[in-house]
Image (tube, rainbow, N blue to C red; front, side, top):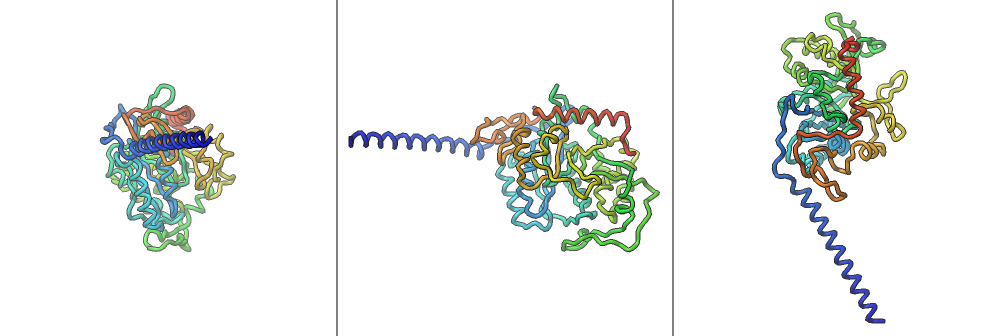
Length: 407
């Protein structure tokens, strides 16, 4: 009996040692995958024969660093360019932590296509400082990268409903969603029917202290009001835009004076981000016929609408899928519906980028498939791209008919 007990203990010890050896081997394999990515990035090609590229400007407030990182990984692709902006009120430690987290992602570290604004600008809610940081971001991205085609604005409260591969390609024949139409198109929700906004947004004269004060404050209202301009037509719409590179170059370089004239006017308007780009593009003869009347976002509003849309949750998941939108807003931090989007639509693992055709690593619980990569110019959309295709097809049909352009 004593010998049998000793033999069992010996077998048990041998089993534990073998198990630990196996776990150690798996751990070393995983560490090797994360710390030793492909030494040289795949060559990125731009042009009409290749998929389009996007420049993302992602903004967040204090304590939004983790949300920005999650959103970045959900929209990441080596072909794109990214600029992240934490508000000036955010602690320097949070900004440094975000930079450190970016360096831990193999693809971001090697492709070097993500930057963080080091000296952030102050942003006043309802003021013109939001336009100021957006124009600054566009100028930075134009200088950093000469290859991107569209500029996309996102906040930490947004999330994608389609993979980046699907954002560019159709599921049916892998032809380009965006490159099947002109890459000079601008996706911007707009209207000249101002309604109540005329008296509440454009007649009041306001001053944004974020443009000149070092401390955060609310906008100041002047006692006088002004008439609606007659030198140009005012348009309004969603502040969330997808703008072409050519239009952004016009905004920044401004070979005529219209961009600066409208910037001066909207500096003193309430929520100028809901009118500046819309009015500029629709008053410019060169760009007024490039507008697609949509921001490609899924949102739920009250009727009449309040200042912000509803927070989305699990009960909204099916409607989000059926919407065919590229993005949705707004979400509370860590809401379970984001995990559903990751699992069912994006197929994204925790703290990992969304897998695409460029990710060549094996998909295992201990391995990030995007820690190794192949040709980043090849794309393979997911199932949700079909819904997005239907949306784009309808919008392009409207654009061709010119029914919803700058009216």
